[in-house]
Image 1 (cartoon, one colour):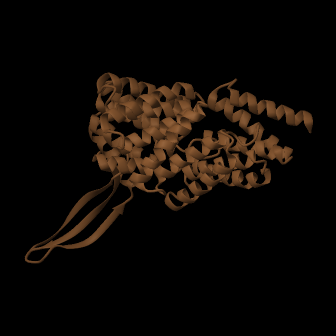
Image 2 (cartoon, rainbow, N blue to C red):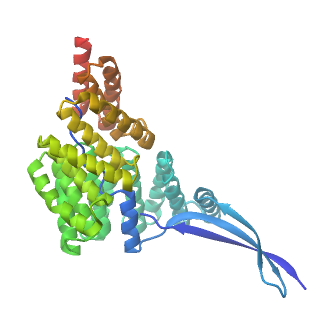
Image 3 (cartoon, rainbow, N blue to C red):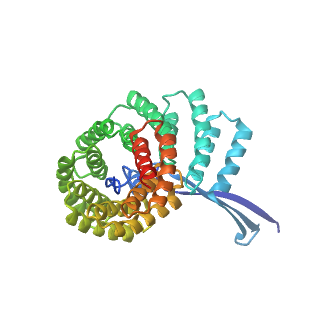
Length: 407
């Protein structure tokens, strides 16, 4: 009778995807939330996202059933760190399999809160290697470029994200065609960065083109079309085309309600944008009712600490400010700022914008010292994010100068 032990390693992949007073109300979120992207990727049957792994040690005895005697679990980061090191050592850092392994590690690190900039470094290493080994227009090179551009945007590196999205969009348009889903996602990604750089007039034609192409290819009620319609409406809002935006959203919200229900996050995102445009149209009572309902929906679906929930609360503060309910707006913005600091960090562009909003409302309640301290930081951050001389920087400098002259 013989007895021996067998060791088996198994990776456990998980499915995932490859958003003078309180500042004007914000459109809700990015093109789609991470949860929406995951849902769409699952529906499309796309690539599986890297997960953890385990090693199983099994006792095998002649004449008896196999018996598992030990199981060693590895987190996704542990497993993919070991895997990347092993493949790089065995094949060299520029082998396509090694580059794939490092990209999987970058994906895992990017999914860990606070590790985005570290993941960017890995992605840049992979992008350089694939550019050299596979060429700039290879499918894998372009996929890495898109993931890097998205992560640069997520970590607030907007000008680098713009450059990465432009390169990706141009390469995919040339190799895959303008109607390819990957090209359309890159066009939408570039538009979203341009909007965050406060260049909405450049973004709107891109969003409109994505919407028109997806509608032609997929039909009017496909999930990607509905997402594109909300993104285009948000772009119209950022361009100041308020009546057009309201008309688009009045037509979109019923379509989303029919497909997903009234409280689904996609429906709530469109209703949040409708609330934002009602603020701009000075229909404040209607906007407050809309936004309070949206906040309840978001808290029930994505939770109180999700970016889309913070956006809706920011918009509620804008309504309260417009109604001259300044003391009511202050605690709302304090909560939004604290939440965005925890979610995105102190220096993220959306955190900086919220800090500016809070400073504006604090001026209205005559808390000048606190407002000045916030504005001093905003001036520095706007210069870093947008470059010197940006309108948001100049506006913060003017308010700060007024405070110093008046107090």
